[in-house]
Amino acid sequence: MNIRSIGLIYRRELGSYFSSHIAYVVIAVFLLVTGYFFYNLLASFSVISFQAQTNAMLARQANLLNINETVVRPLFGNISIVMLLMTPFLTMRLIAEERKSRTLELLRSYPVSDIDVILAKYFACMTVLLAMILPTLIYPIFLVTLGDPEVMPIATGYLGLILLGGTFIAVGLFASSITENQIVAASVSFGLLFCFWLLSYSVAFVSAGFGRFLTYIAINEHLESLAKGVLDSEDIIYYLGLIALFLFLSLRSMESKQW
Image 1 (cartoon, helix red, strand yellow):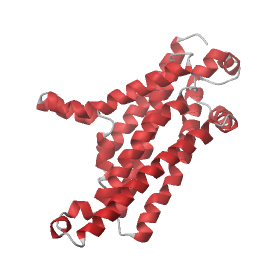
Image 2 (tube, helix red, strand yellow):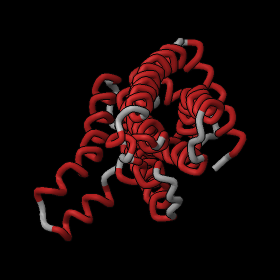
Image 3 (cartoon, helix red, strand yellow):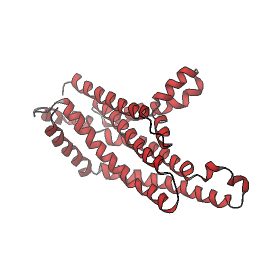
């Protein structure tokens, strides 16, 4: 592993995101959709709060009047779904485009290893992801300014989003490493991620023991835990483990193919 090589490829990859306007379009669509969800959640909470002033039964339902339960947790869930839909557009080109254009052959003529390429491209895509998530901080800042939400669930929820996004990128990088076609790469990435997502909905149809296993490997269940303000090492290890697994699979995929 060569830090200098990783840095050079990272800058090249990051520049290609913004020079081709991919990053701008993905970030703009992401913020537009998440902003819409935030507005709807906040508007619903405002209506419920107003109705609770004249409805004693509604006022006794604490969960409905808890801004964390009614706005913050659903918002993280919505953001994660949008990330699931948008991340394949960021990752589909990472290896597939270079494999198709044969620029990886030129890249390999320099003193760089496969792991240097994998890590540089992963970190570049993670940088775009962070640039995509960062503007959404205005939502909790707005809530803290006007309301009184619990800060810990917001902090752990954002940690969960970053880990979840990192996992999405690792899966997408693997999908991009197995094909030259960007559309195929995006489709495989979305299919894998969607399968991980749907596992939690299959719990009711299997035995209790297998259900606990499915709950653990379901990719969205660990975000739910973090969004509640529970900082459990099990959730962090799960995401880091998946990231390491798919980066390893990407490396093996590149090593198994002639560039």
